[in-house]
Length: 233
Image (cartoon, rainbow, N blue to C red; front, side, top):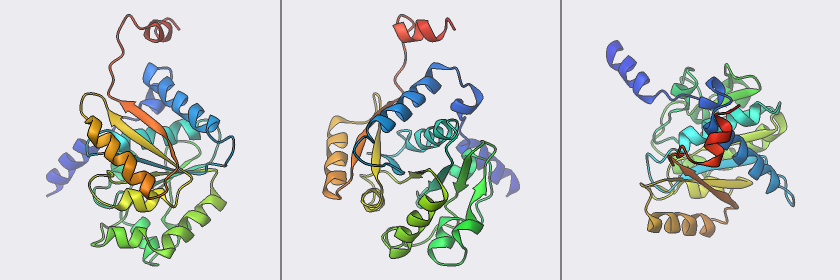
């Protein structure tokens, strides 16, 4: 059983490239996303950001984690919330326990302050999912979820939420209506055009403020000017 758990952990571990390779072109792209979000906040403050995708396996959790890292690197206090109660992975990414998390706070078994964990990244804290509940959508749509976000905004400068894919369940729509902005991750060569359009429509129906889309898994060609510049530093 222990060997099985270890294999599962290794399978779900993600490299936080923005932490281990700050000067890489990919890290630079995450910093560009951070800047674009800051520019989009001209007319309204954006403190709660939901990251989702149209379908599974398109890189939303990796994007959410790396976006949280680059925001923490600016000196802002950042809280990442693993709100993907169907398939939580943030505890693997940051190598933290998942015994107590969002589920426990939503069901009032723990306070938010007790459930939040520090990560090895300076300025970045994590609220893992906790035990997987039988009724994620009901919990996320509760008044308690709104209160958690309000309290989190008092404690942190920025809150990044990872959520399930839009097309799979209603969780992302529910959360998008509670957040200041939503980022839609699109996987190059995988996400279908119709899937992106449908996901955008569903988010708009939920009154989501869509900040933009992140094109994931796009290869940078050696002849690209940015690739050349980045590798000459």
